[in-house]
Amino acid sequence: MRLEILPVLGIGDVTEGDDLAALIATAAPWLRDGDVLVVTSKIVSKAEGRLVDVPADGPQRLAARDEVLAAETARVVAARGATRIVQTHHGFVMASAGIDASNVDKTRLVLLPQDPDASARALRAALRERYQLDVAVIVSDTMGRPWRNGLTDVALGVAGMPAIRDHRGEIDPYGNELQLTQMAVVDELAGAGELIKGKCDQVPVAVVRGYLTAARDDDAGAKALLRDAELDLFSLGTAEARAAGLAAAAVLGDGTGETPADPAAVRRALAAVAGVVAPGTVFTHVTDDEVRATLVATVPGWPERATALVLGGPPAPVDPADLVRFGADLQRLRTALAAEGVPSVLLPAPTGSAASAALAL
Image (cartoon, rainbow, N blue to C red):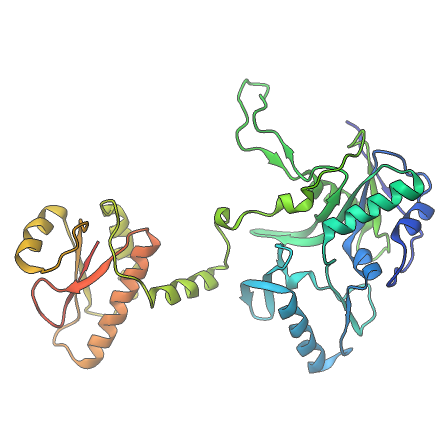
């Protein structure tokens, strides 16, 4: 495979209502079937009127931007100072919902296209019907990446080709069957196009030639790139996940698991809270053999499925403040157990003392 990346020059400033198909076809009469057009989302948004008016500067501008960001946000993923990583209503996770203030008048902000896949399909259809060009179209925008510095362009919308090249089931040169490999080829092509578009050169469209032999419709679009929520292992930032865990811990339901509690998981939970409990608070993990003898004699109403026990006690002598801190420590431990997948139920302590407690696991 031999690829060429070609700039489309002379498009100029795009305004609301402009005909992108005409602008591109006029600026690039050399386009041919099978080319991949990488189109910056900003000119798509401008042509579609996805702009909002804001004050040029000062606190009013910041307040207006915050209002726009809230409207474009489906959920906040992480927040650090003024930075907001959010999930948009499209499903994209990105800084500031993709709202952009560059290459636009100071009194306006550019939003992402309402439906980037639909925008890509419309542009592809217009070029095919009016100019007899059968090309693929990628609508791209710049994003950061978790755990990596620097930005790169990715695909927000696509038409004329699949977003993913699925290698699963193929055999590599060593005879191994590929199990997981799915390449986000439209993201790679978007990044390739960005190499010649740049941010200050007013080249909003690039053409990648040589990757496709022919364009073809694919209804999945760039939505195929969005990871299902249940498969997202990092759906929140660290601070937000901790806050959500604490909120959940405040209403932890009582119950024990269907299977015996993993002793190693219990030990990890105890270790996790060891450095944050009040001085003098002690938690003791009782082994299963000891549990059997203790339960029958001392704990009425022991849950039938419970397989382990953690005893807890506050510092002695006990005062009201110690009891409050001890209650918080118990809640921390239950949260840590839940994080390890170990459900628990709070019971009176086997000793019968009001100043101690037990967790059945």
